[in-house]
Image (cartoon, rainbow, N blue to C red; front, side, top):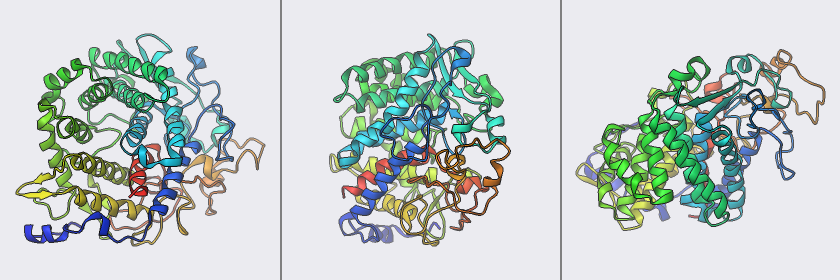
Length: 493
């Protein structure tokens, strides 16, 4: 619920510093949440599993992906509770995992290597998808309609593994530019530990960005019903082009990309004040990413992004003159335009941006300007903490929305691999139709997908724990990826 406060009340409300902010959770709780949020990605793995696989109920799957096109597309992640590899959300997940490590890796301690393993599982796949065929980016494996009609664990999957691509003839600037962003961001993470791999990631990012920029068009138009209504690019592709250029600039410091941003930003959403950030719409995050150039690196050409970042950040702060966000009675950020989708994806992305922007502001003692009010980094941290704590159990339902965290959490999540008996417990194949008995069962899922964050409660803070209600009970990689960064921050504070 959004309350109205006078400016005086606003300042009183937020004079509390983060260090004195009371909470039901300790740094150890956040460390536990961090560990589990990363472990989740092992449950989403496609391909040949490594010997150090920790979620042992999973096994190898989709070992022939790409063979229909005579390319190797084995690996990567299943996006959510199904068995399709969708390129746009996978690339976004990769970008956000990388950004989480870039900003908050120093707080990850013993989990840093696991986080980098999770990142590399997808960056390796994206490299394959971008380099298998010159001038082509493979953006999807699996036929979504057939897949969604079945309830099969990935190890038994026998639905068509069709391969889809974008190219000069069938452009997909949105998915290609997001892939470029992912590869560039990953290159920063591996710069010190594997410089040769980092270099290859960055060079591939530039190549994929050139494909996106030179042959403009939306993959929604090129691939139509294959990607819609699942992951349509509703925001178009301009936001991804600016986002991709921003990440390549940050990774390379190549001045030509700064020139590109300066020349094209105004027509690619740089000055649009939008109030959400997701796998589809990157405008708010691009502003924050570029604002670092001004706040931290003193690049004068990027000054405008500071004000537009302030506008976005202020929109999330209750009581701010610029407040646009809606909150449930229990205090969860609720993105009304996203009704029917997983709401917690907007909670984790906005929380990540609040913390990242707070970090940038802290670097030089700055603040966000919300109309005539000044908002400090402590305010942003406090607001993010409320959202993360809500996910972890400080909510009207008194339950965690992360599987395996706390005493009460979702047990009937919308996830094929988690809900169907493991191949280790039930070696015989369970067919497409036979699996529906597990979809419709009222029993808890037999395989615990530790760390999975589900779609979450409705606008009144209600959650039914029903497997069939996918908007509430389905986890997704792009919900967890920004949470990794947020959990890392709080584990270190």
